[in-house]
Image 1 (cartoon, one colour):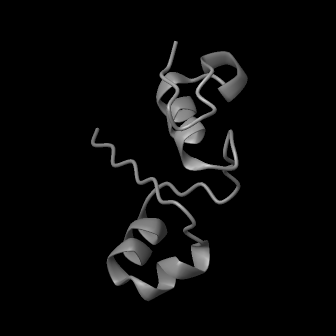
Image 2: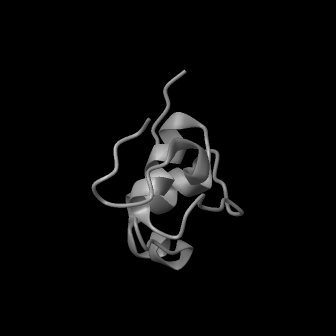
Image 3: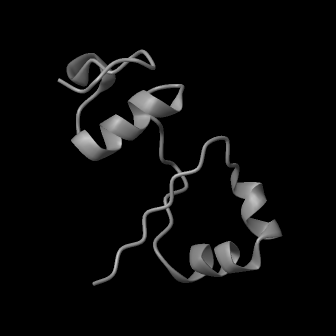
Amino acid sequence: MNVIFFVWDAFRTKGIDSAPMLSSLANNNLYFDKAVAASPWSLPSHVSILDGSYPDEHSVVNPTDNPS
């Protein structure tokens, strides 16, 4: 099984229609249309994706923080 995981900041689903390759991926593969972020900004959300915990658990809430 091949897995491609795309993470975009401030990317809306209506933007997929303007990119034919992305539209094809969304139409022919698994697509999560009700996904939510663990945090309102990127760094804690990305750490949560990779770590599997919420920002209050991994303590990355500022740009200079390191995961514990």
